[in-house]
Every structure is written in C-alpha cells, then in structure tokens.
Image: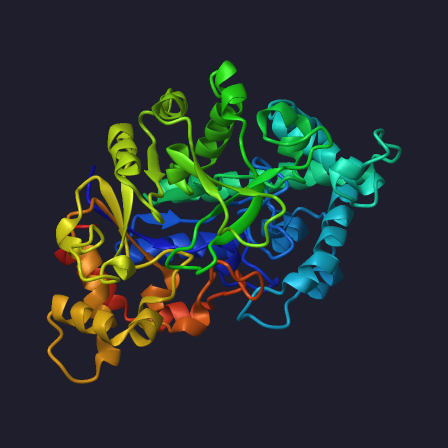
Length: 478
C-alpha cells in the first residue's frame, strides 16, 4: 500500500447554506481542496439516519441514507422545488448544524420534491435491487401510520396512504443518486473515501423489526441485555448505548448473511470502511436493560474469526479498518492481527500512562492507520491544553519541543502522525485547522450538545496550507 494521508470530516460538518453539509457542489469543492493539499483520503462517519441526540451510531436502519444530506440546490436544478423553497431552506448560521430546524422543515421540502418527481421507473428499479432500502421505506410508512411509535407498540400493519411511502422511496433514490455522483468525482480526482459501520443498530430499527431472530430481544421485541462499554478513559461510569445485542448463534446459521449484505452495501458506497467497536467481535460488553449505567455488565465471547472470514469473503481488495480502541486485551490484539485488518493508533492516547504505549508513534506498525484523534476525541490543541501536566510534559519531551509557549506545539504533535510508519495517516478537520476544544464533535457518555460542528470555507482557506503540503511531500504521503 502506498503511503497516504487523509482528512476525517463528516458530511454534516461540511460548509454550505442549508443548515448542514450536503452532497452538493461544496462536497466536490472539498475533494478538490484536500487533493490540492496532498491528501488522497476523505474519511466520513456513518451515512445513516441519526437518533434523537443526532448521533449516527444508533440508527433506524443500517442501510438507509440520511435525508438531510440531499442537496436542496440539486433539487432546484432538477425542477423539484421552487426558488422560494430554496430561499426558505437557507440557514441562520454557518457555524453549526441546525438540527432542530432540520427536524421541523427538511422532510416537508423533500415531500414536495417527491410529489414533483417523475422518474419513478428508475427509482423503482433501484429500490427493487436494494430490498433492505425498500423494506425501510415501508417501515417508515408504517411508523407514520402508528403515530411514530416504536415498532414494538404498533397496532396498524397496513399502509393506508402511500404518500409517506413514496416520499421515503424518493428520498432513498435521490440520496444514493447524489452520493454516487460525489463518489465518482472523487475517484476521478484520485481521492478515496472511507466510510464507517456502527457495530450496533437501534432496537427501534427496521433491521430488528424485519430480523427479530438475529437479535437478542424478547417476544415483544425489546432487548433484555443491551450494548455498551465498561468505565474507561472517556466515561467513569462506562457508556450505556442501549442497542440490542446480536444473536450470534442464529447469525452463524446462514453464514452471517445479514452482515455480509451490510458489508456489500457499504463497500459499494465507499472505497474502504472502518468497523466501529471491532473489539466486540472478540468479546462484547453485555448490560442488563434495567441498568442506568454500564458499570454492571459482563464480557461475553463474540464470533471471532468465523465472522471475520465471512465478511472478508469477496472484499479482499477493500480497505477494512478495525477500530481496536477501548478496553483491549491480548485476545483482541490477536484477533486484529489474524484478521489482517489495519488497526488504529491514536496520538492522544500515547501518554495516558507511564508505560510504553502502542499509541506512541515509535511503536506503530505499517499495517495501521495513525490519527491525532477520532471523532470521539478532543481536538489536538484542546487536548494539549486540558491534559494533565505530567502527560503534557511527556508529550512535549517526545516531540522535542524547544520550550516557550507550549500553546504553539500542535504542529509538532501533528507532524509525528505524518512521519510515522503507518501507511495511512488521518487527521480530523479540526486538527487541520488547529482549533480548540470548542469545536469538538462528540464527547462520549454525554447525550446532548454533540455532532453539530461545521466548518466554513473561509476557515479552510485560512489554515496553514503550506504546512500540510510540506508534511505530505516530506513524508512521502502524496
């Protein structure tokens, strides 16, 4: 694999005029921008619908696309919405995602576009080739019939009005049509795009609704044990995610067909993918659904290499990244090594203790992806300010900081990731801009106030562009 570098930024953080980033012209401009800086990879977060806290990691579907990423200007160009519709969708601020406004207004705009849409032959042909998407549209129509209650509480099982169904069918067709154009443009420019697969889905998802036997749920469809992680660096009481756990014994009977379909679907959209919380494939944290925190859980053995071999089949030429972070044991490390998937190395984790951490760059291996931080971390500048004095001292000594105001040390920390032996180096967009903790995307274990960060085009152009061009040139990551 050629040495490469990339930027981690979700679509929602992309600049634009419509309350969140979209698949419009600005996505193409961003591809041109990172290419001009010597980057050849764009890593994104899951494209799935978000939950009530705007997280894409607990979705109503593992397959369906987020309607907010559909670009209003493309709808206008296609004659599906009017100029006044477009003006009415303009944002109030460019600095954060206007989730409240999107939840109240954007589906109405898309419903109008669906009423004006004429090319249903193509849309129906597309949906017939993607049964999981077609089932999701029906799921959302039934959900509306039942007053948007969780499917476990549904009383109506027939669609009486197909307008909601048609809206969602249009949304999914338009979503994937627009994204396909972005992906093709990136390929023409020599930029690979890496996606993200959340390890779990929501209990109120289409996936559990249509595949109850594949999940550990009771006769009514509710989980008795739920997913999470024990207390760790991010959260002293652990993280109680609340997702239903997989019935791995049942999944094994058909060779993990649901997961293989999920991988095929995702890898048709991207050039590579990160599997979130990969350590759960070795052992996963199971917590009684009645618990208020994740403290009182237990580790249960996962499917291991049997599962890995199933999802690798047919995808041998694709980049699959194992997110091997958190409470990592020798067994997890052995599974990652046997899988052949590159693991992740996070510079911010390198100096948490006094030991010789595998996250210190001198311990990186070629088959790994090096990051300054992930979407769950502070920014590198924010971390530098907020870490303990002992961590900061070890870190500054490691990068041979010459002394003086350590507030200017961020470039040296970023350089370590680029110069490492890891074949792929990735930095979040906030670290590209060298911004502080006020631009952090997500704080694990905290329900509110996350996922809303956006960048403006002016901010991008004001970054130290020559610095990153030189890093990519010096360390042969062109």
